[in-house]
Length: 412
Image (cartoon, rainbow, N blue to C red):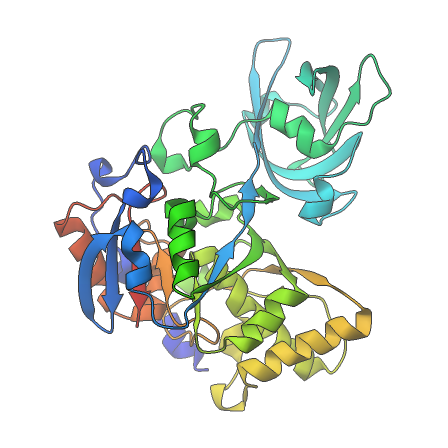
């Protein structure tokens, strides 16, 4: 691919005016009552989300992200009165695999964002006592070393028993659900339910896959009754999803990486539904497209390699020479068979922007995203310049924007 054309993509071409009053600060009382804009080959229809089954193409194969948001924001108070905020990003030790990191007991190390960092000196141990499952638990936090200034070691132990406390239970009692910064408000008790999809299962995200927030049991039942299949993968959404692009040349943006998990069943079902895959949300799309490129890597390497997709890897290949989606998925299954694996875990920092050719996805269900964001670029990669038309239609029809806002179904 010609890198000259990629470098000509300018951030200023992907902005729009988003007044603060158009940002939905709270969700609707009923999830599926949100507005739905349907874009299909240039034609736009306005409806309500609970009608979405009426607009999905026949044989659509919906892919949901079943990650669950953890209470990733933790506060400690020093003896001086200063408050230190620790925002969990990625596990480091004893395992970087999020699903396993949730199960550790006694001690772990996470890469974190640290608020009031200048007040926390090397050697200072922060402590507090909390109740976990009706047990008193002593918790401490310390900085690991000078080389990794944002690596925090958390240690914990039940005070009056020898019971082991899992990390997932510890943070449930210790932490706070982190809301997107643009909501500009404190987390409320209701957010612990409303900022999770009803099908969330795999704990480890620090932000919700918000396109899924509109789905209710009723909507899922309607989809099933119409023969629309539903599949669930896992991408643990990271805080980087909110990271603004601060460079005019978008290629220079430091793209966040996120952990993804696919089961054998996921891949087998994708093989049976090539040409009909519609992801629910940008996180599902990033995961699915990354899966294709992992298969490409396996075919090219002709050996077992780590599942990691660099941000510009897709742009380094001539499309004419690339394997089909079927060949890519079969190579992954073959690799799993050789290693007797039922699931694979990988990392992706894939950056989807205009000039990217979608390999797996035929559309998307998604909310409305921030101006000059990586997610706007992803939408532009899918529907081209019509992204402006879609967003202007949303503005003109009083749609609510961002995480707790309204929805769209985009079918190019």
